[in-house]
Image 1 (cartoon, helix red, strand yellow):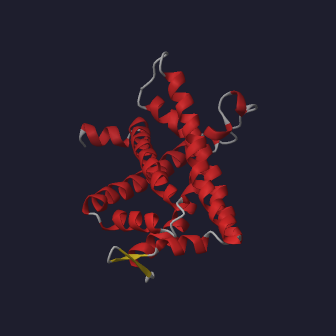
Image 2 (image 1 turned 60 degrees about the vertical axis):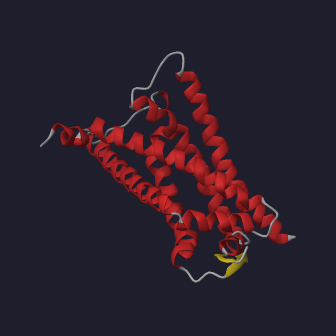
Length: 228
């Protein structure tokens, strides 16, 4: 067994993979939420549809998507492995009288929060990504080119209050997951400094609030718009 394989199989190695894939997924969230803000454009979905078409047909984006899916799978697998290992390493009857003194609620429930996000991701991809890639979507003509009308599918989904509620609750879970995961990733990678660490913590907290809030505001906006 090579030193690299040994390192990956160690607990520290698994945490490093978790951290690296987590930070990579954070960069994806920035791109994704930026593109999705096109839903706020009052153009009957033209900007959003053109963006969705570009993201599913551009060869470079296709390669990036494969890397992204690999990152998600690695993050989930290593999270499961670490969670199982942590539970099995605890002695029988293990209990902490005051767990909040040693850890935060977010850190103790990262597995649950991650599971909520994963379930939502599966539902989300089935509803939109799968339909865009393989579904028989209606098309609209922009500049002489037929483009799949994903906007109509999105607005139809977000005209249902229960789907909006699921989306908003999932974004709350994502916010808590990010609030701990952002700083934890930097800690695991040893990127700590007494001068910069407070800034990283604040940046992580702001990110964990702003990004999920932006995501959640989109279905709420479209739901209110559907009532008009």
